[in-house]
Length: 478
RNA sequence: GCCCCCAUCGUCUAGUGGCCUAGGACACCUCCCUUUCACGGAGGCGACGGGGAUUCGACUUCCCCUGGGGGUACCA
Image (cartoon, rainbow, N blue to C red; front, side):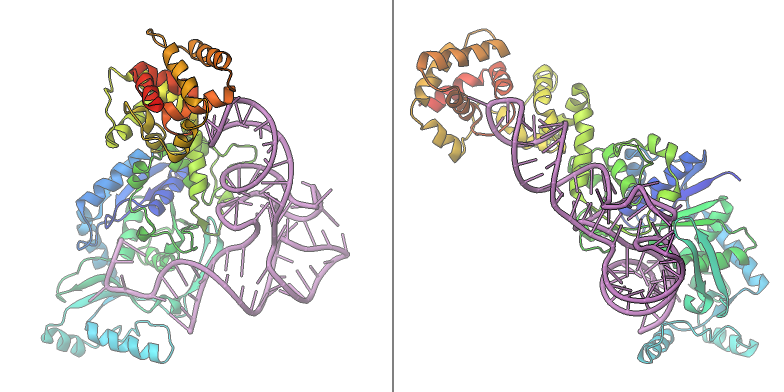
């Protein structure tokens, strides 16, 4: 049987990390099995679904490199199918109309709670007499459609990650609503657990791979597969991504959209790589830095962990840095330019290209995130800098003014090179009779306004190309 | 409350009864490289939640406890 898996996000919010990770696992599984990865948009919640969220989800998946083979399929386009399937169950007598008012249900639940019982529908309308039905309808009461769940049923499935999992029918909350309240002569809007099953059957989904938070839906859905006379697919419930406190990562934990990571300077490859590592471990001997393609070759549920995984920014930063450090300078430069522009730095992306690439060559190995380049190179985008207290102190030391004056005088009219810069330093050390360390440190202070930063000689070359080394040194001496 | 799931270094994990003196990665610490910082390199610190049972032998199997998480909708 061919493998057909899907990611089925609901557009009630941006693509968030949990959904993206589920998508990663589905994608990897499909890749490993030569299967088909399908995208379905679950927009049955008309109130909360928004087109911009759909767009964000589509863009986010693409950005991560999680391309889908089929779809997107929208559930709102398929209401006829759902209606037909509900009618089928109505005809089979597996579902029924329930006329309970919301207040009545609330009262029922309040009573159950008071008695310390699990809140559940008591199936009170399951066997209404024709007279009772007529009376409710005469009253004009709308009806929901409920699917019969037998208390003594036991539902067992073999989960791809958890092995055998079992539930009892009585723990499922009573007969479940599959269609919202509507006039009793019609069928209301179908609900999540029902449409998922109808769609998964219709789309031929062979493995349902989703987050562990869906585990309680599975027994209900298995019952629906049976009612609809369909083969039950294989289920796999992946561990959740947890926040620092160990609770399910939610929108409230900072990142609401996968694109927040982009804004923070992360690469999609690094995000995808890290998400794969959250709950799955690569085969023995395999490096932790890998592409989705590489992971897809070896992915299996044998190596998916059962416990939830805390999201760790340190590790993500390290992974992102690995990608950044391995990236060719021209490519990294292309990526960095928007961040410098965003920061308001003044430069000409075309004419300054060579200079920018030199800059990238200097700072590239120090980056963990693209945004790090902004602060790290701030001192190179202005003719002058504001020295730190530390730097100021260094510039006030004995012999510094003399040394820097000598350096300034030695700067040639033609462009400085690594060799000529070193020569100047050595010359000043010799002629002024000062320590090399003093010259290096002072030069750094005078040139960059700080005692720490990228390579001094390279920084000097970069400033020299702009003609700013002379002005800065002159300022430092004054 | 009830149901379900889970439990190895601070974090992500390897481990499928003897290869375990529990391995790797991140973080942290030290040293080297670098007259700065970072990168890189070499070391170091650091864990099987507790109690029973099975066994010649348990991180690995079973039970209980504890702890954590998820779910409990006319949301998805």
